Image 1 (cartoon, one colour):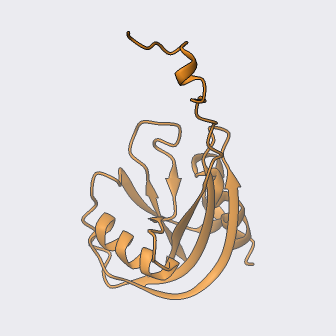
Image 2 (cartoon, one colour):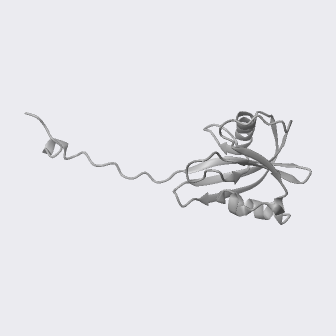
Image 3 (tube, helix red, strand yellow):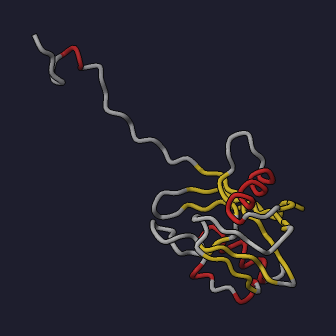
Length: 151
């Protein structure tokens, strides 16, 4: 005799409950040279494609924000970052469901001769008060407003 989903033997099987969104921890490098801030542009595609952001990325399990910065900058730009101090911690919930907690870390890099990977579409150096915030990831905007205001 074959069993089907409607059989009483399967009555205890319940559909999976929706999983609550998990907040992703991210580290963002604040790299200033001669008053200009390093920004990177995300590659095309997805809800965040071609937006500018502070370089960095996800904090992996067992990593600190500073370890993540060193790893991400090496992986994405091919240079060595030296974290100096944590400047701020912000959270942001994107309309498409992504929830992030961003640790902003002041850093220096050993070189500006970047070797970007496919994760970086472009790089740019901008005066903080001249950054068009409409082109920047929403999660970075409040921090950048404060930086431009001299906070």
